[in-house]
Length: 433
Ligand code: SAM
Ligand code: SF4
Image 1 (spheres, helix red, strand yellow):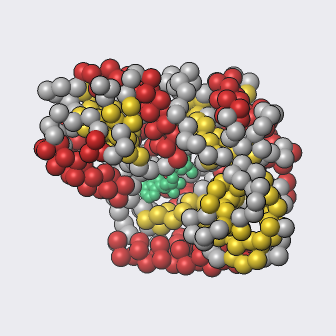
Image 2 (cartoon, rainbow, N blue to C red):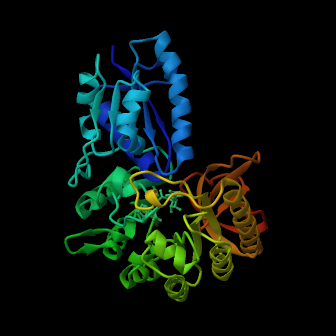
Image 3 (cartoon, rainbow, N blue to C red):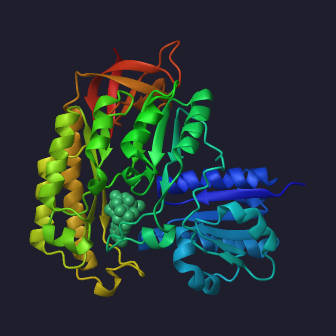
């Protein structure tokens, strides 16, 4: 009988894309996907190391799986991804029941590693500067949107961040491989492509930069919408802004991680821009693409962040007016440059700052979502709405969730015009226009 595998994914969109790659590798090696962990011969966790909390969740889950393994010792348990890379030695010691510990550059070898694991755990956490998996097709999820990896790793080394250590150095997938994937997805009926990378707009392969890649993806017939995540402010070149402004398929939405509004903190974070430079970039983007929506990432309580610095972050958020934001309490990560600096802001104070940032963002989102009431948007239909019987859901070009009543003949993959009737901080309730 074929071995059955169960794979759980934690963390960012890159991990979701990696899990699709892993499923493809294992399926081609003869594995089948199990319906639930209890029925699997192999259980794999694809993990995240970005904050301590992310790691704690996985440690908790490993505890559950250890009990499952006690009952069925023949089950193979594997930990993959960023946490495998980050905590390799400690993991083998703390979780001796693990059969496999494998980092993000080893997925090509997974069938072999699973075969090797026996009495001792198979451990492979070598990073490989050349690995892009360009030739391997992932098992994409069904749906109107697909995430295509354009680049892997990161060379920015922000002082707080573990990504360059766990995902390795920056490398771009050859454009021909990306466009081949995009064509295949379009042929299968996918309408929206999201190009992925930790600093996706740092993409460069020979002569092809990210602006050019956007144009190449937009030229593929059948694809209607192009998005990308996460860009870095320092790599928002005129060529990228130009491609966004002039290619109608590239959607007017930009996730532009700020982290902090204080120059002192930005310098300590080694982000490579000042608050003024960031605001100047926002102004240039808004001039070029007037209908653009902006989102961001904010960290509160970084080493040395004083009340003034925190106020500067709130001020900058007010000045920009983000449509949405992901907000985090600083979590000290070993290996990073800020690790030895330690934590200077107490947990209670971080929580207070986080609450304030979240309240400000809620108010900003609500105002911006409400400002769309009465306006019309083209929405790419994704399927039934999660809430609301008889409602369909999709995204506006600005990546806002819109829900609207079903109508005969309207199905997933169609683009329909809707008019916004009312809005909350996360959803636009619409009528068909
Ligand atoms: N590469 C992307 C960028 O630079 O914008 C983001 C990568 S990371 C997966 C997503 C977000 O996690 C970051 O933008 C940052 O806000 C947050 N983050 C990263 N390291 C963190 C840490 N040590 N503590 C708290 N938040 C962190
Ligand atoms: Fe981490 Fe900075 Fe790289 Fe983003 S750009 S992945 S925050 S090091």
